[in-house]
Length: 543
Image (cartoon, rainbow, N blue to C red; front, side, top):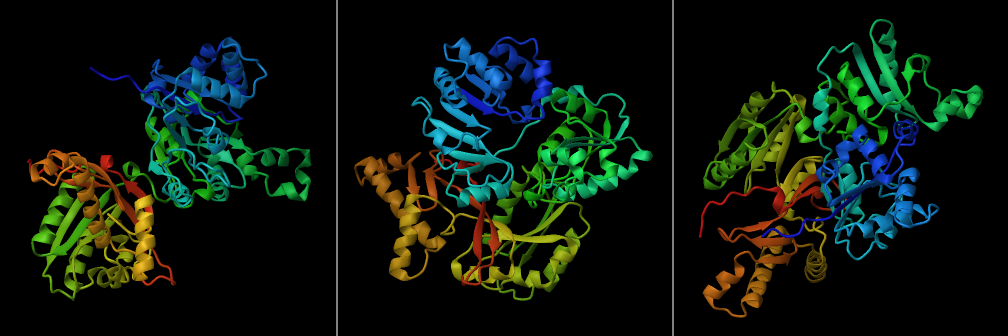
């Protein structure tokens, strides 16, 4: 018999520039349900909404807590004063719905102080954040999610649990883009001092307007709007004025179905990331443009894997069981990602000159489109990574990648700043009480942080203690039974002995190499945690 369904509550927010248009759409709505129905039908922001909300499941409740009209309707319908504070109305809605999981798309407005006021029925809290948030405190949320790695890194450094999460594609987009596309180039988005790169590109594209059908729907900042009034001659405002070529063709912003329609009638959709995004890419316009079938032209940067033009990988490994079995497992995992394996290179374990092998790897990759990576699996001496680095793979756009290593070996990684890879442990990555204790005690006793073999031995000891405690015995058969499916805490995070094959499962950590002159080895900075449920580890040997 199935258990009770999880009761979800999702809160979002409206753009100020969307509200007047929406008020016109919902002019005939006289209740909370009526106004919400109009909103969801217009599809504003729907790429962020969870499926039960879109399906209008009775176990899912949705609101825009900053929509005063919507919230006032609900307050009146449930015996609250229409002058109730927005926070009080939202708390009442959460309690009335008997919410299990609160998912908030507006966490700067409703930060940790709000989370601490949530009713006792709420068991999990999740918030989405895809922009820098100043001094906002989100530490009370169980997890902060985003599709931008740098945002996740920032919240991780602030002590929050984080996880990658991406917008979806609205199935209704299939209704658009099936006819003619009379618009040559479309841009829809903000225009402010935070968009200097974008503004430069827009000015050049706007110059094509005499020969092409170029459409800009711009959400101008308040300062830009003010700068284009009679007050615009004032020196502080001049820098906020849009160039004549842009202001001449600018239209008001569009949202929801209006946006879908414009994209569906456009050949090219232009996208430009906000300056503060750094190298992260994958903003909403990417999902909307591709969902409506337009050609997306966007600036360079780090996009979600599904948006990359393609990834081609070559491998270098030692020519014995460790290397060949490692590559075999890698190939099987790679097959599920859409990436292509160009070649496999194997070298004797005693190799110190990688010139010939490196050249063959470069030749296999250099003419491939998209991202190109040499993945190295090597144990012991020889130092293939730095030898390959000396051959300048960047001239072909080739990256190097490998796994984590012991601290003495990480000293060589200092010559590879920015290299990405994955590891099961680096002492400064896992954030949990067990690791905090291990790092502190190891430093105190040995004047050095623990290495990953130390963490492995410590985890094995914790597994033995957890098994004996659960079995209440040291009998072999009882220990086997106790350890099947056993979950236990380790410095590396939660570990699980899979019941089917007794495989120990744990998180892995995607890292990027950082060089700190005050540290003798390369620092492995976390990019994201790959949890047990994110990985599909095959069952090879059944018990």
